[in-house]
Length: 148
Image (cartoon, rainbow, N blue to C red):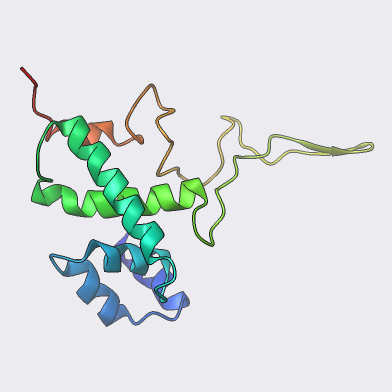
């Protein structure tokens, strides 16, 4: 999976060594989010910072903790990227769902597979999956504390 990510970043003209350095660093969430989105300018920074803070607040509320556990730092970055893409913020557009059928006159074309899902995996579902928090409930449950 890392190889695929690095190849995609290389296709965007981003140096692999620089990408690895940023991704492996222990701080600067904004740089990691920008790298994964392929953003090289600063014009989206305010939007990205808002997304990161919003996701962090929601995660902390869900796991009932005051500070984000270190193992969830990378998860937070991936969730922020997923949210940014799914919500169509900045210069990106929201991903559209699979097309089940298109009909023009007498010609009909189907694009969805038998299960009705597209070939790409969803990374962010805005809580549509049985009430799961962004579809990440399984990952976050390990860090969840009970409230008394």
